[in-house]
Image (cartoon, rainbow, N blue to C red; front, side, top):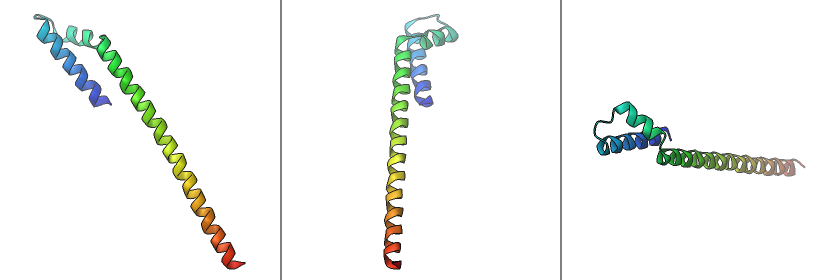
Length: 83
């Protein structure tokens, strides 16, 4: 995510510098960071990361439940053999 943000920022800065002769690097960076395109892209990256984290937690929970079932079945098999 961080790399994507850096790449987008560099592209926006380059575009601003090409379109506006005499614009300083620092001013172009300020303009790029406050641009709507940068803000929207950053929000989209955040939203995507948030969704990915939620899905990862769900996957881990399903994996935990699966292994609980496997362990319970193994315990039942052992108890049946003993009894």
